[in-house]
Amino acid sequence: MTVSVSLGPRSYPIHIRSGLLHNLPELPAAALPGEIALVSNASVVPLYADALLQKLEARGQVVTTLSMGDGEEFKSLEIASRAYDELAEARFSRRGAVWAVGGGVTGDLAGFVAATWMRGVSFVQVPTTLLAMVDSSVGGKTGVNHPRAKNLIGAFWQPVAVLCDPDCLRTLPPRELRSGLAEVIKYGVIADAELFEFLERNLDAAMKLDGEVLSHIIARSCRIKADVVGEDERESDAIGRRAILNYGHTAGHAFEAVMQYGQLLHGEAISIGMTVAARLATALGTIENGAGNELMERQTRLFERAGLPTQTPEGADFEDLWAAMALDKKNRGAGVNFILPTRIGEVMRVENVSADSVREAIFSHR
Ligand SMILES: NC(=O)c1ccc[n+]([C@@H]2O[C@H](COP(=O)([O-])OP(=O)(O)OC[C@H]3O[C@@H](n4cnc5c(N)ncnc54)[C@H](O)[C@@H]3O)[C@@H](O)[C@H]2O)c1
Ligand SMILES: [Zn+2]
View (tube, helix red, strand yellow):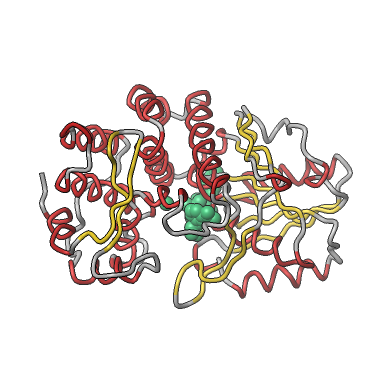
């Protein structure tokens, strides 16, 4: 399966297939110049990057592997700087291509290095987590963290190709797989009722890593993200179409910020955030035909089947959560803006939701 991302001269294919990494598809010339830097991490190098290196070398490419530590803390300027040192050492030219092999951390850092090395070299994404396949490797956002905040430093830099092999998910820790499923469920709610229904029928097969089911949900998810990004490539406008991707993220990011680091994976925070948003939507009456409870129940059931949390974590303090939400750069005025569903497959943007409504949605359990 191939999903194309249409961005004029920056358009690119996303190839999705079980076994893809053993049998590479035809790639644009820019992906396969004479020299390639494979960026990966200590966990993923022995699993996938080594094998890919051998494949590329067998085709006559000169390949340098840059391996970073495993963890969000390595998505830093310091590690990018170390990568520049190694590229300089290898006399890596502006005709080379950087390949990212790993999760979103690797992809964001490698993409930033590709965007900045000699003012930009070709970039290829080989995402190996579900989150990276359906989210971070599509859309061209690259970057590193600053000690004061995540993703503060970065660039828009589109890959020339994305290679998704669902077989990679066999080695992924199950908790990471479930976390990625939260974003897939999000795509169903914001834009694709058929995908949501497909998940209702096939979630168990997806969790058992059925290649066809996974390929289908990855392709549908990438299609949605690609369409949204195609309409608003640089997120020029906070009220632009790209904002719908933030469903569940207003409260979700706040949970991530106030809980101790590592307590909640991103997808876990987002599933709690989507639950809060669905409760808010029911309370504010944005859901068509008074079907709030039904939407809420179907969404919660999918989260529960995926092993994702929906309850507000113990110890979360409302004042801290509210401060984190209000800090969000997209907010002006007294309230906070939310993306709320109108039905499964469609969302709307609601401005200035009051602290009282949000408190109620966070703490009123069913
Ligand atoms: N650029 C974007 O648009 C965008 C969007 C969403 C998230 N992100 C970023 O993505 C990052 C999170 O990405 P993530 O969830 O993929 O985390 P991650 O990259 O840390 O990967 C999760 C863990 O899985 C391991 N791993 C990766 N692939 C594996 C495999 N196939 N088998 C076994 N282990 C494997 C990694 O080494 C890591 O320990 C964050 O930094 C976030 O800011 C970026
Ligand atoms: Zn997300």
